[in-house]
Amino acid sequence: MIMETATGIIENNKTQMRRGVLEYSILLILAKGDEYASSIIQKMKDVNIIVAEGTIYPLLIRLKKIGLLNYRWEESTQGPPRKYYMITDYGREQLDGLDSAWDELARGIETIRNGSKA
Amino acid sequence: MIMETATGIIENNKTQMRRGVLEYSILLILAKGDEYASSIIQKMKDVNIIVAEGTIYPLLIRLKKIGLLNYRWEESTQGPPRKYYMITDYGREQLDGLDSAWDELARGIETIRNGSKA
DNA sequence: TCGAATACCTTGCAATACAAGGTACTGAAA
DNA sequence: TTTCAGTACCTTGTATTGCAAGGTATTCGA
Image 1 (tube, each protein chain N blue to C red):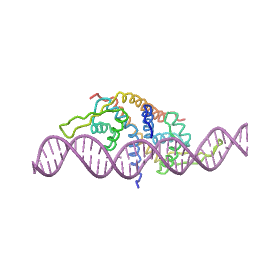
Image 2 (spheres, rainbow over the protein chains, first blue to last red; image 1 turned 45 degrees about the vertical axis):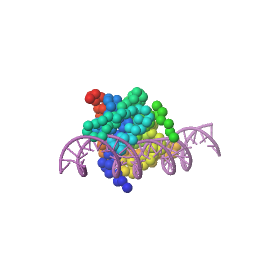
Image 3 (cartoon, rainbow over the protein chains, first blue to last red; image 1 turned 180 degrees about the vertical axis):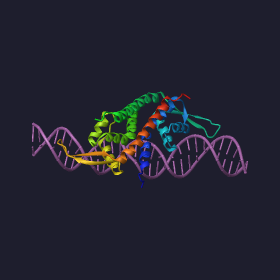
Image 4 (cartoon, each protein chain N blue to C red; image 1 turned 180 degrees about the horizontal axis):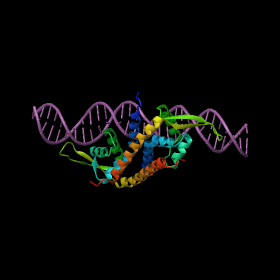
């Protein structure tokens, strides 16, 4: 049984909000250059979007499966080999659509926030 | 078995993005004035945030249960009585937190989008 | 009295984020 | 040469939750 506390509501919602943009931000990051899972997690953390490993690995596999991403193995001198993901042409197409979706959502929220008092 | 199609990916993600801001937008709407479920759905649809009835009713009940909302019954000349929801003081407090959470997320996405090419 | 419009609500399914736990490689210290 | 710390990969099980579908009740006009 999980208690819902004051900060819990906020935390919970932050998590919810993040969920919605997970795939979007991964594609955004990979559109700038190839990255491996751990570095994606780090880049997202840098902008306060927290993702767990258990989230990112299955997600990358899924995005690969539906053709948005590909990967290649690359040796590392600092540990085990890294799986570098890259975005496909198809992935870039889809990313365009997600850009629009995000803009639309952001506009929608903005409208509700600032809209006339009825 | 559900096939994932090109538009399906986008649609799916739009849905995902919406999910994250569902509670937030409900609180935003109710912070401006009392509304009943159907009118909330309509107001959200007006800004292209689509919500189903099966989503909103359980959600309003949940938000009431954790103290963010209250409601009162009001007669209608155009059908059955309406359950008008209103935001509580506690709800307003929490809404402040959600405002920040949204701003932070929007900033994060913006940074990833426009950040230096590295 | 029947249907259309409006409004409320519940059930069951499917999607999915994440905590927790696990494997394996490298390099350096003991 | 064994052990440990750091890095990187991955899987399993659980809990949450949005929504399609189905259901009840009220009002009003034909």
